[in-house]
Length: 250
Image (cartoon, rainbow, N blue to C red; front, side, top):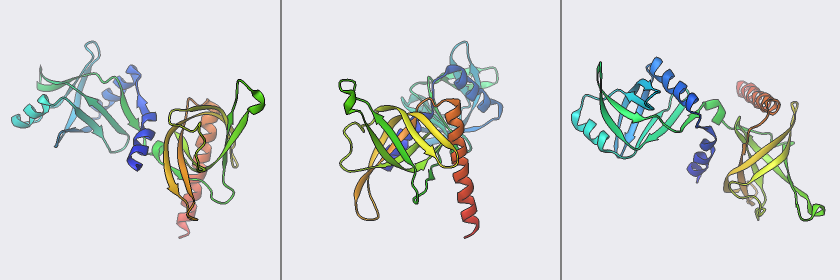
């Protein structure tokens, strides 16, 4: 269940802008970054040789083991990934052999999307247990404005991409994966109040220390304004600094 939650969280780091994808791949080629190639039960290492923007293809280095190369080229689902530094991952469904002026190479179609994840973006920081930070979600009723209400959920962690909150059991019927909520208020201590659009990305049952059954709900920040991004950055920085100070005293 934790793996499913992680996969859902990673989706927010999907890059689909072609210019940005080309820049990322060109940087890989420029710095000779190694990539892991995974298919079936096989893995190997490769690197990007060049990006042919006009023909929408990418050339990668090919191994010296012909039998391995044959299995690779016959595979219909190949995962390219980089786990050190900035994490990258994308998939290709068709690989072919190409001949360049410097020798043979693997040719793949330019990815339509890839995952780019900086460790700090994905790193979750626990929020205070004493004086917990509330997240106020307004729920409007277009048919009956008098029935407007709010959900008040308690933050348990935060990252640059979103927050984790605790919700009561039974879960509110509107808290479903994919649901969007506008004008959500989070008053980050010593930083300021945000007004954000949040999207439900994952829901996981949890058992509290007192034995109570509740839910952890993962909420993604959707296109936060520059001002809100600044508040989120300052709050996560404050939490990191406090955690480091506490660790130094142990």
